[in-house]
Image 1 (cartoon, rainbow, N blue to C red):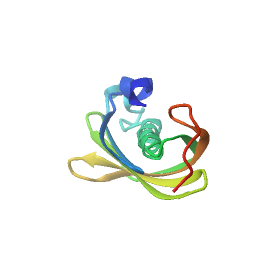
Image 2: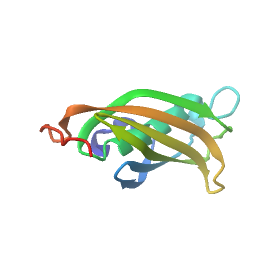
Image 3: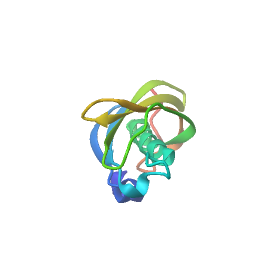
Amino acid sequence: MYADDKVAQDLGMEITGVAPGRAVLRMTLTPAMVNGHGIAHGGYLFLLADSAFAYACNTHGAVTVAASADVVFVAPARAGDVLEATAVERTRYGRSGVYDVTVRRVPDGDVIAEFRGGSRSRRESVLGEAAPPPA
């Protein structure tokens, strides 16, 4: 998936961990990612969290997309900050799932944002075949 993810590549996102229902991504905030107040634009924080969510919910073999998402901005981040988004599956039911993502500043661990995403799996797998039934 990362090989075709131009957004993640262009923004310098690094996948630092993936397991069933989980993903961890890192990104360094550049000066182009801050707003007029000198803090990270919320869209970039959402984008990092959403990307971790996408990688986590696509670990089960079915092509899975976002059905909903919500973010709460907890603390500001600034250019030069390294952010880490950790996505964790909370539940899957049928072709749907719920995932929580925490965005933290590295290395101090301060929480920057909390994100919740709802997923929906399509009927085909990532290989274009029929997707396996949910566990």
